[in-house]
Amino acid sequence: MNAAVVSMVTMLIVENLLNIGHNTAEAAVANPLKKTYWEAMCDLSNDGNLLAQRAASRLKAPATTALKDTKTLLKALVFLESANSTLREAATKTAADYSARMLQANLNFYTGTGTAREVQAARDGGRLQGALREFLATQAVVSASNKGCLSAQSGGNNVVQGLRALEEARPTCRVVNELADEENPAFAILTKAGAQGEIAAAKDVDTITENGQDTKCDLNSINSAHAWLDGSTGGNINANTPSVAAGLIDLAATGLTSKGLTTLLAGNDAPILKAAHAAMTTGGPSALAAATATPSSAANDDNFKKAARRYLLGLAADDNKQDQQLQSKVTESYNAAGKPTKLLLQDINDMPIEGILKNSPNLKKLGDVTDINQLLELYFYYSDLNKQRLQEAAKKLQDLETKAGTKSAADKEKECNTKGQDKQDECEKLAKQGCAFNSEVEKGKKCTLSDKAKDTSKEAANQPGNDGKTNTNTTGSNSFVIDKTPFLLAVLLF
Image (cartoon, rainbow, N blue to C red; front, side, top):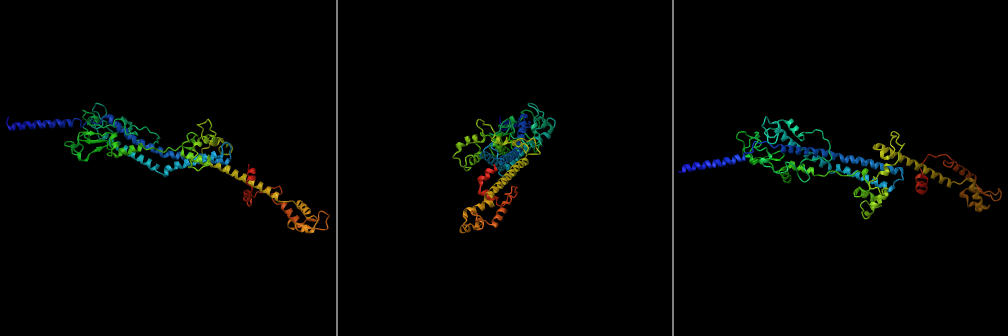
């Protein structure tokens, strides 16, 4: 065999080997994505929508709880104003303080980072849904007959044709316009730990596509001669490290592949996927409404502890030296012995209000009232009632002091007679008390009350408050009277 023949044989062998390698590399190209794979992509897309729904719920929740806390605070204040004795004042003040603290905590969600965090979660979910939906919708609408990239069945060459067919085949591929808030949505693919399902693990071209089912899917071609650019010869896009569907699918040297969602979430090559997962794992607001608190549920709540230390233990809100006494003190204060699930506000809610709210005769108890304006009406009712009682008590006290300090003319006359002893010099010493000496009157009464002093006593006796008539003027010296005799005022008030 001469050199020319050897050379020709060698070239044929090399060409044959190259063709074998080429055929192996291209064995799976032009095949469509497996139905189970693109369906999981739809589910992941819908997870993005669920992030937005959860964000809507979380944005609403603190406001809803804050409204409840506002009503609870008003109920506690109404109870305090009513001076109801079914619950100790310290316990009522604790409930009011606790409600105010919880109200503040829920409002802090909006003034702090809570709002921005949930808006960001909705944004990241929208980006995820948009990227995957756009990819899937594009592949569905550019298909025809048995030519396309989304397999319609396992082991066959039928493909999904059109957007309607895509959405009917997998409802999670639909775009829902109504944003129904969902507090705890069931995510299909995203998990706290990472991902689950068909797209979680890495896939090569044979496991991500329907192997052996050539549907002329130009997307599924080798990146060194990618058919998307030129169906006949292709274009080399290898240098671009190309990927589609938010980075989930790579256009690799062998065709379509995936590193797997689990791996992508751990790296930095798919920011849209990673941001959505980070949003999914973020906790939301968890403040408990004071209205639903019980002695047991509130025991470990920092806001309740601060309120209880202040009013049940008489300490500073942050003084925890006597915290070991809190639980027993709470149980005692809220009449909750043997009732661990009793509401802290139960006694407040049970306070009778029948007949006070004229426009709502069916409301029998304070707990029945849910309207803030009606709660304010009740508060003003008891506040005005207390003011009226205070004015009446102050008036009674003023009358008592006026009567006690005003002597009748007869009393003063007797005092002059007794102290003057019919002696002119002794009587003159009593001149400031209205006494005057008269030698012409009978013995024992020569030191008598002067005519001027008699007239003054008569005028004093006729002053309002000393004549049996009601005096409606409760201003002036009342503040002095109240400060001077608080104990007597309290007796009169109650």
